[in-house]
Image (cartoon, rainbow over all chains, first blue to last red; front, side, top):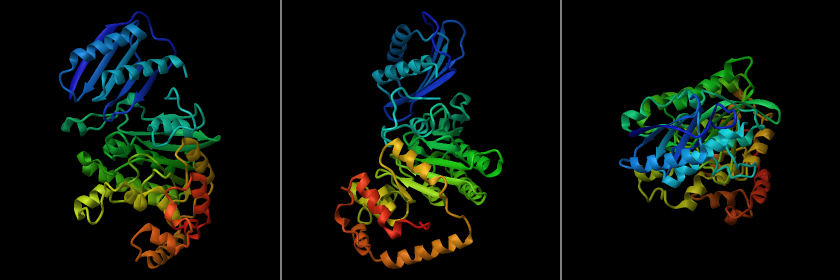
Length: 104
Length: 308
């Protein structure tokens, strides 16, 4: 398994008041995303575990794009990947932030 | 806590994740999860094999209400490693069932959303132990008057230890997609050859292990359409209808099973069994709509007694 940690700053803090959310499943071509509201300010941490070798640049690009679009400040985001395509990863990350913001 | 953005009661049980099934079955906002994914109780074995892990080890357990009534619930994620029983996965279910059996404050009903191929090969010893502990805990809960209801309609079905567990439950609900057995089709083919059982022959697999066959033969107590609402309705109907769990019931069950074997033991296909049962629709069971099939199943004497 490869692991990759990305530490970044978002433009603003994420909305809503849920403490955590989980979306997706660790299944072929899919991934699980756990989002936790545990960081101070606008910090954002993304921790990726994947069995696929050699796509670090793409992971970094997908995560940078996500942080710019959704501004998930304050979130620690942990991914268990099983060979999901970049579009699936983007979708799951977006789904997760939407859930965190939904306030339920 | 709701975990999905778009789910509704009408969404497919087969396609739903374990968490979506739990959310759709329970009253909105009533679910309280035990050992939440943030606790990161992951498998202690999978990393040794360099395999991906899941934060909930493929099973969601907790407490909630269904039509206002308190219940315990466990849902396996059939798409994570085939919903298999590893050490943590099994331990979570054992804990839930022992809580039901031993705590005075626990709800008197447990829903088990089985979606499993059985024991996880990479954690074989721990998995086998978990399966036997789960079976013992189911029986202990039932002996204490707790209704344990299995709901089966996911892609992994309920096989191996999961098939035995289902048979130990008070009641079983299946959909057409649900499959129930001990030795799975691929395993039979691997061990006995394709002549014995062709696991790629989907009509054959469903005729032998599928939900409609199990229901008509009396191996399942209720039939649900492939949506969350239908499973919810069936579970609510069965909550108060758990059979007695005592020696006279077991003896009756033994008697009925012996009679079933005598009656149908020579049949070489399900159609032959349906013929002996005088089912007029025997050649088009697979084509019947959910409503038509449910009506037919309710008419069969074989399908409507406490013995499975």
